Image: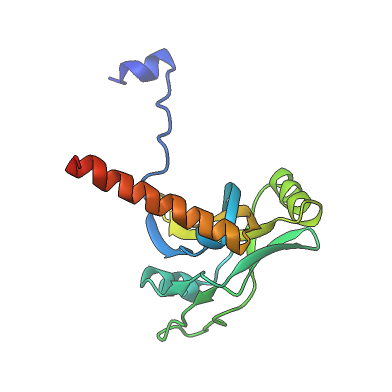
Length: 167
């Protein structure tokens, strides 16, 4: 007997993507850049790169994305070579990112006209086992902006301590 929800034509809502395994994170990005908007994109990888990522050997700290010739590319992301692969890969090759044409046009507009930067925030396996990259449009912070952010963070910590101890 089919479930009642099936008979009534009600579909279960897709839950928010909470079940994913982080492969690489760019923690410095939030310190160096003022994040405006983020977007999840796919990434084109070789088999040996996926095997290496499953072992957790990657780094996106010094990487960036750019729009070249109508395509989105990730540059300078490090994925360690997989030693048991028959056909290996270059560690820091340019990798193609996958997004819709509408998103690509928005990203091109943000980088070329508004002077924004495309910064990768986190690379992860989603709940279906696909490698995804969270990409952010951001503007570089000046030194005084970084100091103000750090002062606000310190004040928040101090405030929490005061509230916890009741001084």
